[in-house]
Every structure is written in C-alpha cells, then in structure tokens.
Image (tube, rainbow, N blue to C red; front, side, top):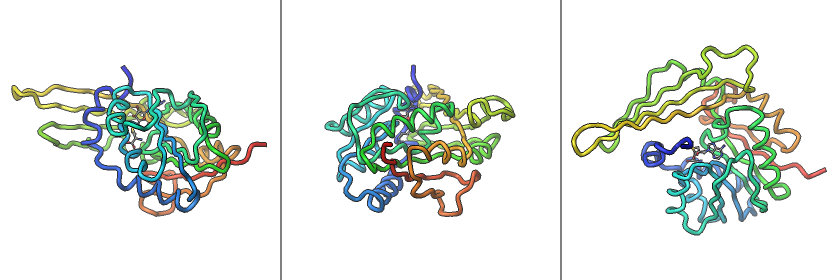
Length: 251
Ligand SMILES: C[S@@+](CC[C@H](N)C(=O)[O-])C[C@H]1O[C@@H](n2cnc3c(N)ncnc32)[C@H](O)[C@@H]1O
C-alpha cells in the first residue's frame, strides 16, 4: 500500500481549496513565462491544483498513489495523469512549466532523491521553462517536533496530526542530506453505529537547508525568486518557502 491510500478520501476536505496556491503559480507564470501553454505537476495528488490551472493551460499530472490519481481522474477527465515515481519517470514530452507544490518535494526522503527529481524536471522542461516548487523548511519541521497535535472535527469525523523526528535526535552527519520528520495523520471516521474507524497514515518528510537546495539547483536552473509564505525574509526558519527557477540552456 502506498502513502495516501487511507488519507486520499479525506484529503481535499482536510486540506481545503487550493485557491492561494493556484494564484501563486499563475502569478509566477504571468511574471516569468507568460507565453506558457503546458504544465506538468509532480505529485499532483487529487488534482485540485491542476483543476484550478486547467482553465488556461494544458495540464499533466504525475503521482504514485493510485487512490489520489483516481480522484484526480474524476476531476480532470481529459488531462494526462500518469502513475509514476516523480524522481524516476519519463513522459517523452516537454512542458513550459513544471510544478511540485504543497510540501510534495519534502516527501522524497533522501537528498539524492531530490537531485534525481531536479534532473527529471530538467529533462521535461522546454528551453527557458519555469520550475516552481515549495518546501517546508528544516526549521519549520524541527519546530513542529513535539508541538501540540493538530486536532479538528470535520463532517462528524476527527483528524489528529502529529510531527515527530523520524530518527530520534537529528543525526550529526545528516545521512539523508537533511532531517527526517514523521507526519502521522490519524482519521477517526464515524460509523453508522456511532463507533469510529481509525485510518492511520504515516508520511516521512525531509527538511533540507535552503543553501543546500540552492546549490543543487544551480547547475541546471537559474533561481529567479525565493519567497516565504508571509513575505518575510527567507530563512531556514521560514514556514514555507517558494522557489521559481528558469531552466538553463543545455551546454
Ligand atoms: C501533500 S500531497 C500534495 C498533492 C497536491 N500537489 C496538492 O497540492 O494538493 C503529496 C502528493 O505527492 C505524492 N507523492 C509523494 N511522493 C511521491 C513520489 N516519489 N512520486 C510521485 N508522487 C509522490 C503523494 O502520493 C501525494 O499525492
């Protein structure tokens, strides 16, 4: 069973709409690649973001979860949706824009995996194409360790989320190229008989120092902008950091 098998059915209800992310992606496209007509999303999940972008762009999605892709297919019947690992895929096509949003890059649990994803993006981008992604910073992930759990009721069900270090204390040599956190999402789904059915999903997220990300990007991409969620100066303690990069020409 892949990640998100249990979570998929509740994902959109818990996460909410994607209007902010759609607006941010469209803003970067307007600024840096206004002529774009095609877009590929890595880790497209339920297709909520693609749905918001499909009005102006021809959209394609890659995800490894069949359950998430099934929801995306219902939403976007004419989009190309591919079940694949976003660090190792080949679509034999190039796109004006590639995006990887909503902590999806953090889901790749080793830094060599991030480098492989950057290579796949490079291969699938048109000349001067735009790569937009975001990350949960290492500081944000560390700050969530031991924080009170997130608890919410929805539609009579209950969701509980906790974030813990996946390897105990941060390892001194950062073997994965960053720090691994374990996100545990427990959904208590109310049954007709008043009892609750538990769905327990555990997802690893890797937090990587921003300087290391920038240095891995630099061979293949020009960094156009780096912004924090609230517009404050970007640092490893920012909540979420957005990157927009341009593909460098092939040598
Ligand atoms: C946090 S969700 C984000 C979904 C979507 N981008 C959004 O904004 O709603 C992360 C998605 O990435 C997918 N994913 C995680 N690791 C992946 C991998 N190595 N290859 C492909 N998809 C992956 C998961 O299945 C999940 O659908």
